[in-house]
Image (cartoon, rainbow, N blue to C red; front, side, top):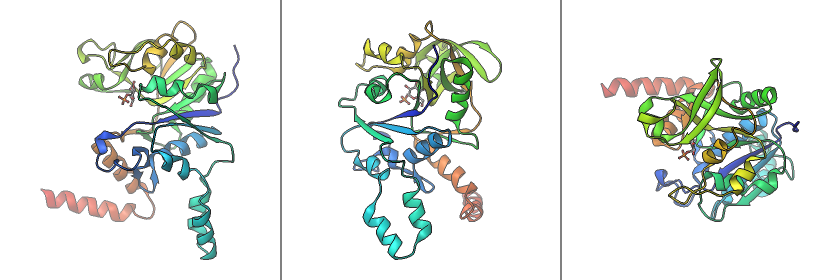
Length: 294
Ligand code: G1P
């Protein structure tokens, strides 16, 4: 079967962000800022850099800020215009996708990642699509999702981003059962969500970037909830293995788990140190802080 190229990306953003309370009490966790833009914009920027045109947010109650962020802000833009603040105006306006290219759907109940992706089925239709978990931020020149798309174009199948993790961390991730491995692309023979580290089929953990065939929706439709009542994306993906090629890709780039405080702070430091405006001063400050601590 030949599919059209990957044009759409799904961003599940309905999570509560309990690990960041109280910061996320009245604000979506995806609006937490790394350097100068919210996490969700880092994800959308990565998608856009890889040629994705349509952005589908699966959001929950009280997440209006995300839709507003990707809309024109008329009053703000007009004020900046009147004040001649063209650079700032560009920052506000240039990141807004073309009209009609942002779609929001609601995940009405917190029934897991698989359910969130399934909620986007009508907006995706019958074509391969990308999924981004915005907590996972990947710093690098070659957008992570673009690397996955290129592998998908070669194999015609499903692709997930993978990273080697210490075995004791395997229980935090979806993990692949690895087959043939060329050092970068790894055949996926099975997938298991958050295994007991001792029995994990490998130490290759799934990171929050996926390129999936639309047949995933049929697997999600079967709705086989876990003991906790959640529909896992990993379980539905496991049932795709006999259907089409399935690979994990060891991507190039540095991944930060911005769903944790440590990962979030590391991301801010890494992005800050690379920033032409603040990088040099931040490096001096960080060096001084480290020295004073000793
Ligand atoms: C989710 C997925 C898991 C994946 C992880 C990557 O887990 O279910 O398979 O490895 O994201 O960040 P969560 O972190 O939402 O528990």
